[in-house]
Image (tube, rainbow over all chains, first blue to last red; front, top):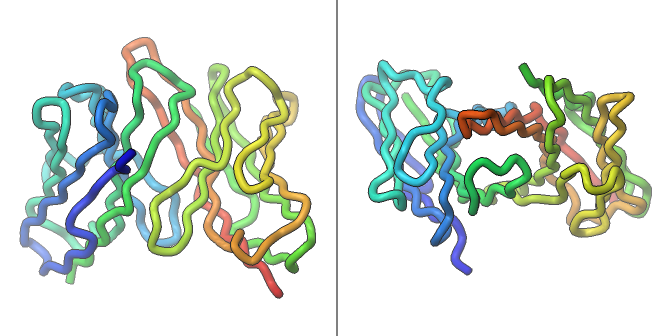
Length: 116
Length: 116
């Protein structure tokens, strides 16, 4: 079974530029998550999709971050414009079910973003 | 609101000695609890999860954790550390709300170092 794929793996940009990350979840997984992991901290949930609908985006800085999940499969996360404090690893995860508290999340390798 | 506290940011043990990584949580409901491991430049991998079926949970690679409701703890243990156990470990609490929103909170992580 193929895992969660993310690209690019690394990205370096100047502040105020735009950047986009892509995630392909495990086939058939209903729920998709985007996390931000700042160095030395645990991942923080940014947004959660169930199929192609947003369930929770309460921690997404909507003035600069946006995300979509096309046809309930792939997802993109965009930052526009980037700030220095956006430097972090962006993790994508998927899980098979919806409304299930015990559902295991499967994580991708992450995209390391450096904003100069 | 839920929260997770990992009591040690860094733990160092000798190979062959026991491992104890401590986690305390707070939750308004009956949460599900997870331990994930993150090796350098790799994605997060599930070690084990508590789903209320049994308070002592066995995971992969010889790890286990015990859910203690009275102490609101979910400590991770292993009888004998191996060099390959050196990594970052995250305790996670999960609750699914009526709306389907899944509230997931990661601890700040414990870095395990294993000395030869």
